Image (cartoon, rainbow, N blue to C red; front, side, top):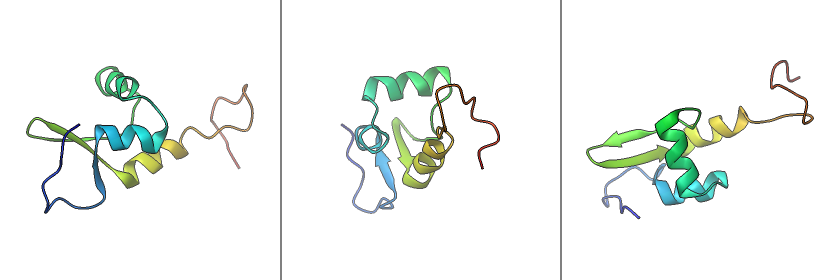
Length: 75
């Protein structure tokens, strides 16, 4: 797991912490990053980090009222 520098903003988390935050495996999060459909991420040199606000926003788009709900028109 990548370690962020001491002066990195506290709202930026590495892939391992992001996967725990959203409840997905690191592998799944990596695949979503490659193929699309995952949360917005930042590429800092070789490192990939996620902003906690972006993770929460992505999770909010996954809300459904039923299994047949396509995600449109939530009230």
